Image 1 (cartoon, rainbow, N blue to C red):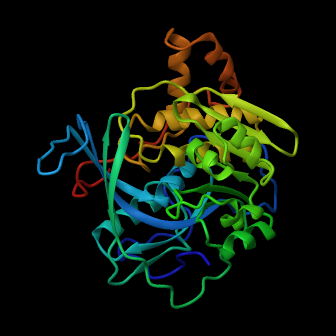
Image 2 (image 1 turned 135 degrees about the horizontal axis):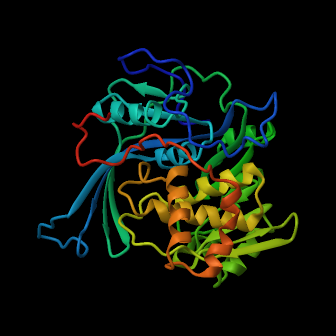
Length: 380
């Protein structure tokens, strides 16, 4: 059952139910939309955190000392990372989540609903429940996180039609736990894309991922994939996972990504885009969002991998997991830049030539929210 449903809203200016916020620069599914299609492109559920991110640390914090960070930002985190990345790529995104009954929760609700146009009609605020918080410290290309929070109490009433009809759903698989909503979504025709977290039990047993049978695609990182398949190569791991799920995608960090489609026998590998990273928080979520976008739009497998890797690379140049996600304006600016300068190889230019037929010739983007040091500043 999803973790959160329709409930009490925050007091404030009246707003309509459903999707609000600015219109996207580009609709990537315009060519495939048909009358009678679901109103929602992607549904997801999970926990929203308030993320506080410190960057510019020279090294990991040392016990008994004080470290000063050269940069700091705050933004919605947790499942908000994925939801924001999907919405910024123009997908009609519905999120079911619990929000804390505090200023952090109000900020996160406003940032996602009004700022990003995410449909929170299936979300709820919980009186007396405070928002979960994560402090993330980025250094040496990695990050260390400290989190605090309590599980939200269950809703008093079941949600109507949850999960809603949707083209796709994104699910985080938890080893040893089955989620009824995943099977329900797949049975209703939604294409389920699954990610997975670290297996704290240390079992790394594929049998613990029972919901994988309902999924169209599985997108673990290389370490997770190799542990679940008992292999020592990410490519071998992807081939082994493709025996359990139609589409296996393994991300390999700076080495790119590799995918195997067991339905067609096709495989593809795309190298990563080299950028100067500020904060890697949420890059995996952005990768999944980019891949989901390309899949729903019907792009070739290699183009989907390339686009997912590009959006993830652009995201690490900004603070925060959710508000670092790029929109189409950032993708277009990158493509214009690499064609004007010689800092990318000819092979890279050929790999991303598909963007020519996709990106708008000229578009006025809305100003994307970015992470800020304090929640006290009012966004324009």
